[in-house]
Length: 452
Image 1 (cartoon, rainbow, N blue to C red):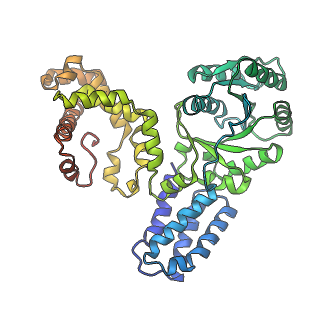
Image 2: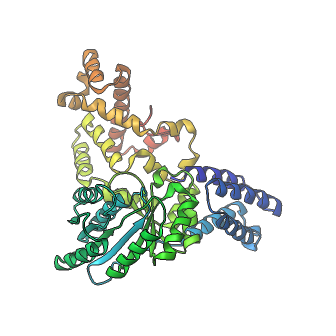
């Protein structure tokens, strides 16, 4: 996420890290680079201008010029300004109202509104322990109602049925009444999208808003449209009292222009980021954490939260007990590690949140390949249970059979077995308390098992 912006901004301010003294000239040159980085990230021009002006004003002040480490002080200013531009702090959903809390979803067609309804329902159930009902007021798009029905089932939300012969306002009112009767904590109302903003669409959503009086009116927008996302959000905000924005498809957005522009242009907070296609790929938006990721400082807090939410603790405990009893680490345990990584979004998502990962050499980053992990998992799946438990029995003919069954080559099987042996040795050292010695052996490289 935001790889392009992170790389360009990182290069522009990295040169200042070791500078003993900042001058007007080197600050001016660095700010020119920062300005270009933001423009290339498709950040709106007024946002770029304000950002650079604020950084310049603070950078020329005493806090930087008289600092013992002026380069670090300058980086802190950029970090603070990024955080401020995106909204300072997380703006949580207002869930304190008398149930059912009504959330109205608005946005253009293709922004991922309906799938975001499902993700939000799942997040509310898992993180907030709320019961959730969803309803579609989109009577225009073919199969829109059926799509939401499917999404609701996938995310264990209650689906309120509607049909194309009904009026959108009547659907919303009926759903609100049903949510009250069923004592649902939250009602999420999905509205019709259009390919562009039009008067008819705006009039309809205003009527729905007036009829159900939602506590939250969220605008769902595709982050890959850059500053256009912010401009579209502004147009909606002029018609509706928006309470926040959800940026979708941020996992495919290397620029980050939308995240940096939305708050400035609309004045509305970004509340969530859609970070993938899976139903749990929705994150609350924390400006300070995103600023840290952009500047290569990582986001350890989010990483810890993600581990707590998605790590299968029972499997981890089972493996720990197995190793303590002196039983060996086998290929089924190795496969479990891949599956745990997949549940957390893969190696790429994991490293995105670790400090300093942007400075790893390219050859080390090339080793972090989720497709490679999937291929290794396919190879293990092609083995018999006995082969997974006793890898030493895998001879040449077995390797050929495993390779054919997984659609790989024998050398791929050999590579996996070699990496498994390395991981096996690492687990033995962990059991014997040799963690420090093991870490020294990495010498800054990737752990065994993650090379190509």
